[in-house]
Amino acid sequence: MATPNTAPAIETGRIAQHRTYLMCRPEHFTVSYRINPWMEPANPTDTALAVRQWQSLYDTYIALGHDVHLIDPIEGLPDMVYTANGGFVIDGVAYGAKFRFQERVPEGPAFMEWFGENGFQVVDPVEVNEGEGDFLLVGSKVLAGTGFRSTGDSHRELRDVFGKEVVSLTLVDPRFYHLDTAIAVLDPVEGPGGVERANIAYLPHAFDEASRAVLEDLYPDAILVSDADGAVFGLNSASDGRNVIISPRAKGFEAQLRERGYTPVLVDLSELLLGGGGIKCCTLELRR
Image 1 (cartoon, rainbow, N blue to C red):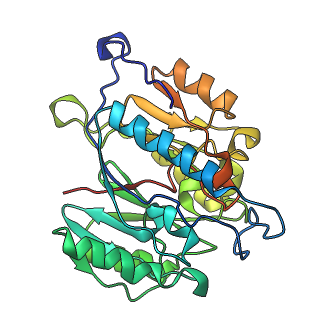
Image 2 (image 1 turned 90 degrees about the horizontal axis):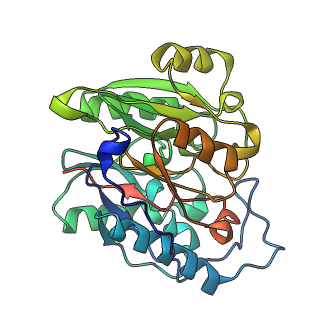
């Protein structure tokens, strides 16, 4: 597994905040259909390798002091490992997912059942949305993606459910079909003393011109990631405000993070990328 840097946080000023995640062991992982440009059923997949790489990510979260809950994998639902798509959770309320493609539709009820059994208030979705894949909590705002999976109407529904400001962003590159493949949330919702200092990294060309203008205005200090690092799912990462778990192939992004005082933690999920997912895709944050 990746070995997290445990040097005192005072060295960088970045503060690691405790996180609680939901994950799903990829016991049934394979690529048997094609619903994104990364998937090619003709290419072989190695389920055992996918499980080992996933375990490394799980172990990394535990070593960093985070809590990880597990949802049981279901045979015939190979993409269930990408738990980020299973819903969006804030303050104990779980807004369920309603998948665009028929192959993934049964995942929605499975996740909502888990939320209900584990004490969350479940809101059934009306509009097509793919959970935290397209909805990212950044400080007091929710960035919401559309263009390939979640509909614009789901952004309105999201606003109605949580009562938060929702900022709509349009994705235009089919390789980056979920928002969490093109934006990484780096900073905690709150810093010391409750001061908001949310910031992001993003891939500019994944968005249309209007969305780029919005991001430039909201996050003038954001890290702009190269196409090369975006193409290895470098932005599909998880951060606790100090430690940022990223692909070891995103070399430029790794250097950018170090320059900003973050601690990159490298975890290889190359096998799961064959299904179009990475670190963040395998990680749904549970906010009580």
